[in-house]
Structures are given as C-alpha cells and as structure tokens.
Length: 481
Image (cartoon, rainbow, N blue to C red; front, top):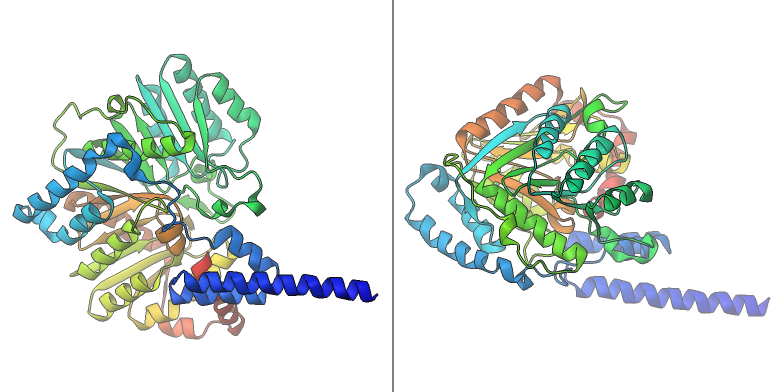
C-alpha cells in the first residue's frame, strides 16, 4: 500500500512539474492576455485533458513558421513588384483605389499581395451553380488542373469530379490535388489509390498519423482553390461535398464562391504552387509555365488575392479586415458561419457602429457545432448594445464568408470571422475593389436578409437564463476554437 501511495505521489509531482513548465511557457510567449488566461484556465481546470488540448491546439507557429515563402526562388520577384506598386499607388488618381488605398497598401507591405487589374469575376451563390460551372471548365482543361481543398468527400459530387480528374490525367493533363488530412479525414485509401493509379498527383497537407501526438493538427489548410490551365480560378467557401448541393437536415446550405479569370488567377496559382512545394517537399523546376499571362483584355477590375497562415509574419487578412472596417464611411455587411473575432476586430466593429456606420452581421440560426454556436452568441449583447444589427439565417445553414464596405469593396474567400481563421489556419480570400461586383454581392446579402430573423437587444436580454450560462461557458473557449 505504501509503495502504491509513493508511486502516485511521484506521478503527481511529475504532473505538477509538467503543468508548471507548460504554464510558464505560455506566459513566456507573451501572447494576447485573453488567450493566455484561457489556456491557463483550460490547463488547470481540466487535468490531463487540458494539457492534451494545449499540445494539440495551443502551439503558436506564426513565430516558428511552419515553412517560409521567402525560400521559393521563383517567387522572389513578387517582393520587388510589391515595392514598385506601393510607389505607384501614391501617384494614382483612380478613385476606386484611393477609396481603399490603406487596405491595398497594407497587403502589399505585410504579405506582398500584388494588386492585379485585368480581371473578370463571376459570383456563384450556391453549390449547384458552382459545381456545374467547375465541372464544365474541368472538362475543357488542356494543360493543368490544380485543386486544394479542406474538405473533399467520397460522395456523389466528389466522385463526379474525381472521374473527370482521372479522365483528364489519362489524356495527359497535369493534375495535382492537395487535401487537408483533418478536413478530409474520411477519404478512403481506395479512393486516393484510384486517383494516383490514373496519374493524378495527390498529396496530403500536413499528414496527421497520430493526432494525439501531433501539435500540427491545430494548423489546417482551410483553403478552397481550383486553377485550370493557369487561366481560370475558383475560390470561396464551398468545399467538395454533397451537402453543399443537397443541404442538411436543417435546410439548404447557403454559400458563396467566385470564378476568376485574368491576372488574379496567377496569384491564386502562386498560392497553390507554394503549398504544393511544401506538401511534397520538392522544388518545381519550371513554375513559369503554370503562370501564363491572360490572352485577352478583360477589363480593369482590381483584385488582390490575399493568403495568410502560420507561414507568414503577419496575420495579413485579419489586418486587412481591421483596416477596411476602420476606414468605413457608410456601411459594413458581414456574413460568416462563425463569429468569434479577436479583440481588435471586435472593437473596430463596435466603434464603427457607435460612430454611425450601418453595421450588419448575418449568422446562421443553427450551427454545425454546438460549442461554436454558443460561443458566437456570447458576443451578441455587446454587439447589440453598440447598435450593430444581427440577423440569424433561418432557411438553412449560411456558410458564406464575405464582407462588403461602402459599396466599393468586397471580400469573398475561405475566412471565417474568428481567431482560428485569423491566426491559425491557412486561408485565402479575394479582396475586390469594384463597385459593380460589390453591388452584386450586397444585393445577394440583402436578399438573404429576407430569410433571416432580426435580433433586438430587448429580445436578447429576455432569453433563457440557461442559454446565457451556456454562452458564458463557451465564451471561455472562444479564443481557442
């Protein structure tokens, strides 16, 4: 008995040493105080489990950098171009650019996100239309097809697209496919072997063999990218799965995607090639052939393709959102399936609304995650008190990830309005500086409001006490979700 007691005492002492070491490590990293307190609370309140959560999800890789884009010799010219564009912007008289010059210049400086002009954009407002368009263009591919997805399911649409990829690979088209190991967890090996046997080059992004032993399970590739022949590109919120067409038990799946043609596609392609080099751990000898110049004059629609993640020095997309919000003069419309912003963006939104800006946020009435559902709602009271208008989409699940400002700026991509998208995941979005395109996005947003329930401050104050308790508990975890 004494031996057993002695053994447990040794184990307890060792565990306390580990806890103290981890807590000291969290404090030494000088993180955001809210995150620091949240992690220390989790570690102390949940013995063993809290420590495991921290190992899996608490590692900070922005400073450590999972990989460095600067080592890619073929992309070094981008830095030179970005410096040149910063100088040119100072001389520009283009009103569209001047309205958003701070955001444009910020992205040029924090992530070398080049401003492109010769572009066209097609807004795709649901899964059925998006996949119909994608399938038609995939069938017409002649040189290369590049896909990068967080979720790819082995279902009807997943197999339809896979069959096209196989057919094109057998025809000699170069087909490359990156999938995220966590988001696409259910892809069978048989499915992947079928692709590889046909010549489709397939790679997993940060494989997680033993999730409990891998801290990099926290850093997921949340991007959605297709580039065809280097000339046609797609990005947005839609993954490859039947639910984006058929909906779920809660109703339709509302989402937004875009089709790009022009110079912006080259920037989308560069993001894919960078991720491909990282995933394969091999250099590519001739990337120029995947970056053709547009063959036609498509117009003068300005677009920046912004990518962010633990591979970059700055949380570039979050910073761009913050700048656009603080620069707003009239209105801000936001649609996001999840709402757990950091303090900077939350404060910017509240300040904008209190200063008279019309701020509207659309969220789903029912979420696909209960913890996220309650964590998102924990922000409602302070938003409503700041005169921000909140709308809950009741027709199904609204997964659109977009923001528009003042009718001349819009952004559509993979980015949720939460800390995971801002700081942890690999994300991508299109920053669009165009009144016509923004008007189309805003009209779809306003139409969706017809399928929403408007939340008033008084009604929110009168909600059930148990709901308030759930929100309070979930809020503790919001910086970690």
